[in-house]
Length: 104
Image (cartoon, rainbow, N blue to C red; front, side, top):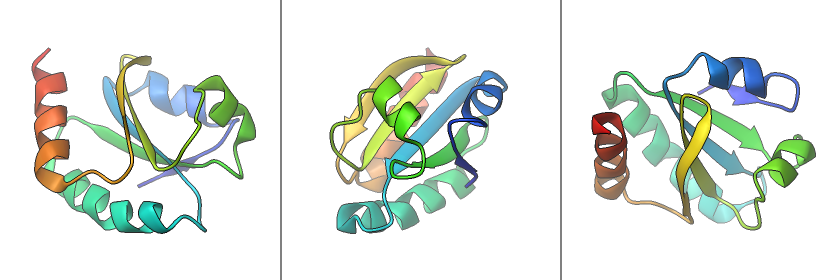
């Protein structure tokens, strides 16, 4: 899962019809719990780009998206935010959310 920063974000997201962006921090326990779930979903899902953003390394993106707690998953369709989730997500709910967004 590529890690984006303030400089690489816009180019990467503009190329993705549907993107899941994980706002995390290396010191965050729940973020560490979510990471393997996201990696598993990424391997099983086609047509969706997955990215990570370390909030400590990309403060401008964190402000731009109004990230107040982590982990936060932001779902973008054609570069525009369509929804977000806060906290650790279980794999079945995450897979269902992505399927719903792909069907829109």
